[in-house]
Length: 217
Image 1 (tube, rainbow, N blue to C red):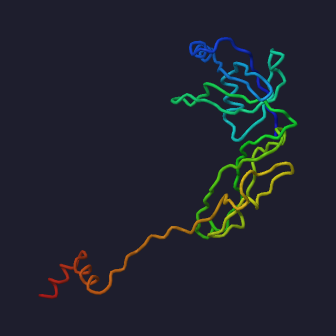
Image 2 (cartoon, rainbow, N blue to C red):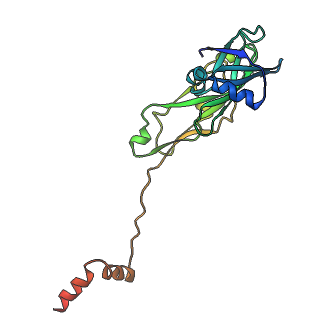
Image 3 (cartoon, rainbow, N blue to C red):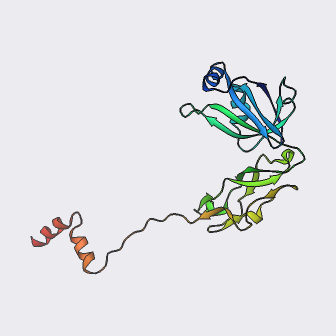
């Protein structure tokens, strides 16, 4: 996985007024924390963060560029992004510092590829999970995990134990959990009326009255 370099700077003030002023200047507040450090309040460029980090799927490793000696060069993951409820733009970010020699648990997106045989026969491809938790070193975080659905037929499925993942990556799910399946085609139910009900239905059908009058004449 590619490491994304992003510029961050220490920030003063933790009150709401200071945060609003920061956002008006095109920056957003952030916090860096981890098991081996006290939390540090940071500011980062809102547009740069949205374009290069917040819009990406999955987990991505960040290398922090900063004038602060205890921040510059550190590696971190985005733990949480708070967004504006109206514009959906990032308004705050939580960054978690990682150790390159210690495995971490993150979510890896699933990409379903291939022309599914069951879909060609009229079935419906139904993903059950869009991502899976994995345990790996920060530098081994997969951008995504590919799932080939080509051979799937109707009523067949792919489970966790069928995933092909690179060495060093451990899926943190039960092996029998279903990831994707092919549902049968949807068939509209047609009700057939038999016996007296059929005759009554026929009598009430459009044109039945006209036919009856013709017989009388």
